[in-house]
Length: 438
Image 1 (cartoon, rainbow, N blue to C red):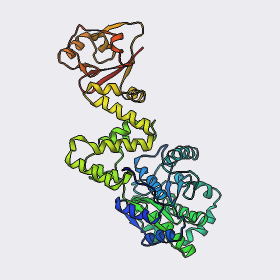
Image 2 (image 1 turned 90 degrees about the horizontal axis):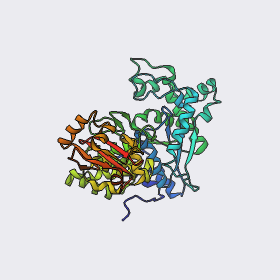
Image 3 (image 1 turned 180 degrees about the vertical axis):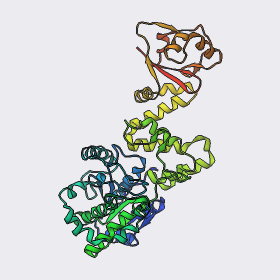
Image 4 (image 1 turned 60 degrees about the vertical axis):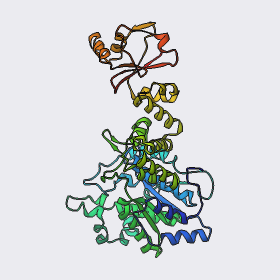
């Protein structure tokens, strides 16, 4: 049985699937009927989600709306990826205690190109009824004059309406600039524009965006007397309410140059048992029964961490590709397993990953052999021969995970690299150096 959900091309299944997976925080009351009606009439509804270029890379929190677009597409709904070339120049006040630093236009444009490339991995752009669409709101705002915006947009929304929104209300005491105060109008106009130009009547977003999303609904209602729809998802948080996607080193980004595939894999491998089921439901396309089986494994075999291993591989595959996922998985086994046999299955990609995650040196080409003491000092695992001897006597030294106890050992290159073009030299559990063949 295939463990992944399959495309149904039935729009009504979209809301049902989101509700089953716990992915609905709020939605407009008529959304279900709208989707069923489109299905009955054999229409292709459109849905959009927006992504602002506040950084050069998306982080794991952005995966939620991106993958919701893909879920919609599998249900026969056409997704629109909206890039915030205009909104990113202002900055969304939602959830922020103080004003963002404004991006320069060139920086915003550069960030847009980078996050666009990331988002195109998650939505299918193949020709067809549900072919993905990419739009940039800078395209319709760049020639929109301030006076025209006030007349065409501002006159439809009262200040009372805006100050009642949580994103504004929580900032009123400490201060909010007019630019950030007007952000909800700018985002609301995005919905109005896509409604008019693309016949897009559904917006997706996180629960912190609900106020901005409903502003778009209000603009459409007041200007055209028609209903549109919105659905918000809960924020991706752990059981303590903290946002997932944070580590001691900062945010977990989708850009491999900011968060390596190995670190990305390790983050998901390390999440708590109580959080793994939620992430499996929110961020993977596994069937419900397969997720239920993994949840059962957490209860019956928590020490195996089966669910986390499956989750880490699947999310790394989605973001970085199958080869990177396997490389990160194999490198992880080498670093954290005491079993020397795992080294036999270390492929070229895993070796490449390993070399970026642990210190590495190359065996000196002129040397046919080195004493174990010299090897340890060259690897900077000991500062002197005396310290190297103490490590060996304490049983802390290993070559390819095999303990070495002979302080007089002469290490021959021909023997060391007979089976593989590297050697993992270790002192204790965590100090490792990869020695590569000359």
